[in-house]
Amino acid sequence: MRVLVLGAAGPTGALFVQQARAAGHEVTAFTREQGGDATDAQAIARALPGHDAVVSTLGVRTLSPHGLQERAMRVLVPAMERAGIRRLLVMSALGVGDTRRFAPAFPRLMYTLLLRPIFADKAAGEAIVTASALDWTIVHPPLLTNGPMTGRYVAAEAPKLAGFPKVSRADVAHFLVRALAPGEWSRKRVVVTGG
Image (cartoon, rainbow, N blue to C red):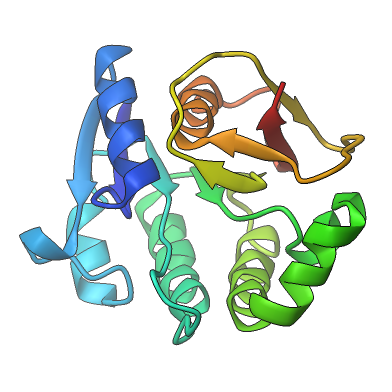
């Protein structure tokens, strides 16, 4: 499969690129370093042709998202529809939107106190994705770690979580590679957490 990756220079995106290539996929890394801006409609339109799927691992390194997710999805979704590319995977976070109900009490408090602007931006971006006709999957990991890829994670639409759940970025990347092909996770939100 030919995959365009937004956020490929980030820690999870870079792991996805590595694992997807190892699995035999052709991957195009869309990064700022190479002149790519995920909120630039012309740049996205130029990058899309020739791909079968798009994976977004976009994120911010501060507590101010500047509307990144919403602005990126507002550009990406219609561009994919025009280009005839249907498969879209988006990495979000546990606690965004309806997944908040699955978060244990302490993480839920942290989301409310510290991450409200980031989560609001992610929710706005997700609303654009889910209102589209695309074949989307939105992945909601809890706290991300830099641990190794274990393959022993749990992927579920309605998980039972306790304490302070976490998962390695490498395992999230592994799930994203698995979920590339349309099928089991099409048009679903899935929480991916450490097993």
